[in-house]
Image (cartoon, rainbow, N blue to C red):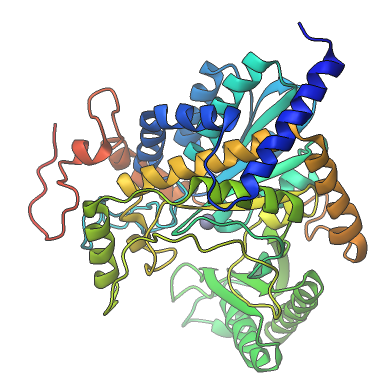
Length: 534
Ligand SMILES: [Zn+2]
């Protein structure tokens, strides 16, 4: 055994030479990274099985119990310590392996989209189960990226005796933006040095600084009134539904005077029981989005006054429940730059003729006159925007204000499809998703090796976090110590569909791929009768 100082010196000289090699765009991996990349190629079957299995579970936020069971059994079989139900969220989990620093935490979302059930590998609308949830956001692929990366790095760490701890965790109920602020509040990331988060995309890139998009507060307003006979003595009633409608009218008038970068939307989550009973209870659920935390809180305060005004006008009472929260995202510059070198070394997958035909057919289906197919050029690192751009949110924002964090967007889906929609599920259990996840896993694993082998990257990341990111902006969670996660959400929908979904779960012991199990000739461009294999 080498004396540790000599070993470190050797390691540092090795590092110096590898990091020089990697500054050249597209230079292929050498040394441990090359070994890691071959190991991830060799795990392509595992990647495909994880992606196809999670696709077939089609679970909505807070109800990801099959996903939890499957992934934690896989991780436990690979020597990870598992904790279930972290942050009082029953479908959550926390898996860790190794010891010492750095502590690297890999996260990715796992939940699906309501009514997005869709047969994969076919270029036309065909729900697997009418009205059922599906992976119309591609969240079935990110844990495959992270787990395969973690296993490849773990093999190398074990053999080379490299110190460090690998953590894997799921974004539960990301579509409700409803757990990561709770994880952060409960201190899960207090001893973590870096978070590598992964999200499906149609190219491969990373960003640093303030990200495109918004943060939000997701809040449900609950109105209580007085029931009465709708025809007999309605003057005795006080309608909670009236309060909901007046609140919505008030907010919609106020919209004109909000900054154009805001986004807000609502659904009436309870509109009463039946017309001849004056509704004594009604509720409305709002998302209030803006690009800065300060403006989110300002608009939330306005919404609160509108709710109270609606209650006064109807002689009802109002209370509220926070359902979700997400700070606007800010990503770490040193880790993003290191990851970008790894993205250039890995490049985009080699797409087959079939993959391109399928992608173009989906783009045509979604209205493109000039379908471009799958990306063949890297889009490049995303620098901070000169002027902010509005849009969606991701509760990784809260974690990004607690620990140096980046998001790798990996190329497992097709561009030009509709988000949160069945079209975005069509490629998510096909070779496009499998190859894209394999490419993403190599980038995650290479960046883990950077963090493990180069202590200065970990300290540079922390310095950026302390001296740049949080120098002027102080993180104050939108949730308080008593706000509980909304774990009851989606329970009824999943109870309704689960028995039928179970019949369609992917059986990897009998079928090579999920497409094989479903009897789909990929790419199936024209509708014809699908004969399911039995
Ligand atoms: Zn997502």
